[in-house]
Length: 445
Image 1 (cartoon, rainbow, N blue to C red):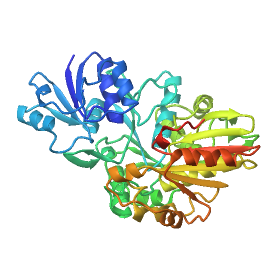
Image 2 (image 1 turned 120 degrees about the horizontal axis):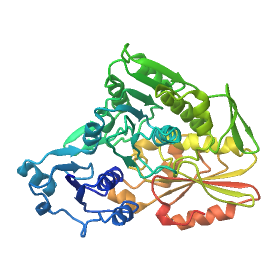
Image 3 (image 1 turned 180 degrees about the vertical axis):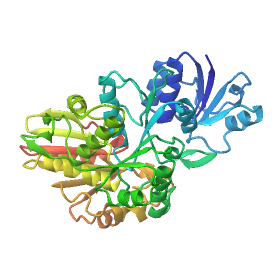
Image 4 (image 1 turned 30 degrees about the vertical axis):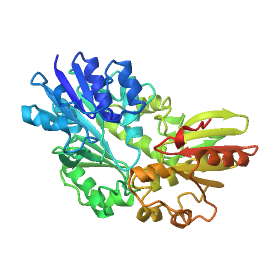
């Protein structure tokens, strides 16, 4: 049993790691200045929620074995200062994950999109095969207990490789610390412009990711992504390169079927991006000794990660989906998937601009054409969110110009947007909500 203290315990990954260490019988404490749901509820359920929000240097004593530092903390954090003064061992989240997995085979899923889904698919199949690897996921996945699992017995670890920065004292992207034996690269599309000021700088992080693959390791990559191909061309010659492509498939009565060497496989998910994700997961499972018939047998029951084209209601001719899409390529791919699956339906697409990148005026042109394949394009942003990020307030004219869509309706009131949704529902309609936020908490069903 060890004692761990988390600085910024409320982070999405941080609180899940805290819970995992607690479940393993360790003593876990932590602090944060703001803790929102689901982290608040999850921590409370395991008696790990701090009694008060804020920073309390007195919590940092020499009895603590390890301090785990989250990205949300600032470099002048008083608890970080006290930990340094005490000479305590300080790990960032990804440093700790690497140290835990140093003797395991690491499969790391990187890319601008699809990371949670591909990692979740791999885990779904491996667990069905009783392989039970350790894992780190960026979001919850149905059938998977928590977002983090750490054990001594597991010989494999599946890691979602996030390209965002490691900690306030370590500016490296998280996925540069994991050193995969098997790397997956799903796609490259500029994101996190508050950190990576140019696309070239952003792309460079993925080049470094491939350079850090263990000697004679494997690199699974999407051959259909132009930027990924250019990274692969420059990658090391000792790496085994395994491309994947869009598999053969059919859509019948709103259901997607894979046409495979093992016969026809009925899927619970749909969209070209998900079909590509399945291929990435199949190759990753192949490196672990899972053959194609076994993979297809188990992937048929995969129902998708939460908020990744999640069906939240279906009644009569109305179907409602929720998706995490917010970056331009994700928005376009998600709308295209729904359009392809429901070609005869009216498609109402609602997008919330919520991230730093999406709310930045200079980034708006990257959304050009991304919502052109829906019948009713609606966009919402919160003026309060813009103020918190200290950005210039976007105007409707600039947003419409950036999206290059004269039919786009822009709202700063989520309830008003919802009213327009209701007014546009017809006999056969699909409503698609896309956001990494929550549309001010309005009911989406």
